[in-house]
Length: 317
Image (cartoon, rainbow, N blue to C red; front, side, top):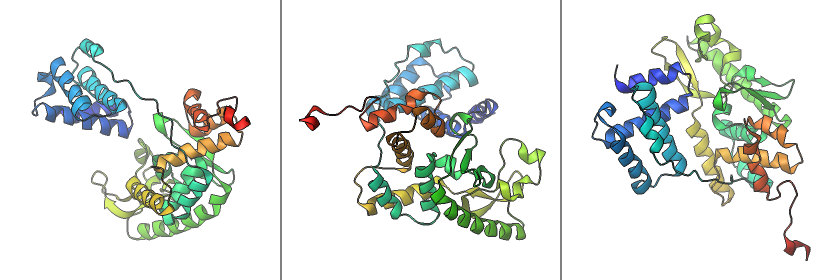
């Protein structure tokens, strides 16, 4: 097997996320190209050190990006090539910067969302109203929306963890209307011999007809039908994230908000708003799906109040 195919197979055997697979393969390709397309089996510590120095000094990548490259190479040598990697322990790890997340005020969020419409606008309102990550929203299936309970069920979120978050009341009517249009589109696809979607894990083999059922359809389907080569099914993928990101950037420019906001800023703003409203930090942690409450506590620093609600001395003169 070719090296990259071996890496891909190894990663999938360990059920790493698709994003991790993409990132590791990308860094391994760059490492190979940096070394004149020589096989990594012919390379060693000096070539790895030179590559990391290139990233840090010439490319000026961030500390977290450099550490991601180290993780990819450590996986390559340790898990794929089965080479001793004790020398990797001596590599200099970059110090990851601690950043306070950017958040929007209520007026800023309102100004941006008012400039958005259509499917992208509905996705971004869901990010702000439910605290979802962008890909979590785009990967929602119809049966993940619990209108009666006012819940959104997130399946296979970051770290392959499930959780339940809120489904805002104000978004229920627009979502129902949107799903009605999606259902009509799905029925039309089925009538044309299409209407399939990709199913997680081995569900497609266990339930051969489930890929056409309404409950498994994407809440936010893509605009085009494609032919899956492996199954010969005519499918729709979910909406691509770049379509939403592009629409959000345009809305930020039109709104006059000067902050460099992006889609994930809506999730940060959701958490900050809940803390401002007085909700318990453990509740916010559960809604966001953070494994460690210390990650959620970052938003207390955004509020600049900690647990004590500190006020500046000049404000009480």
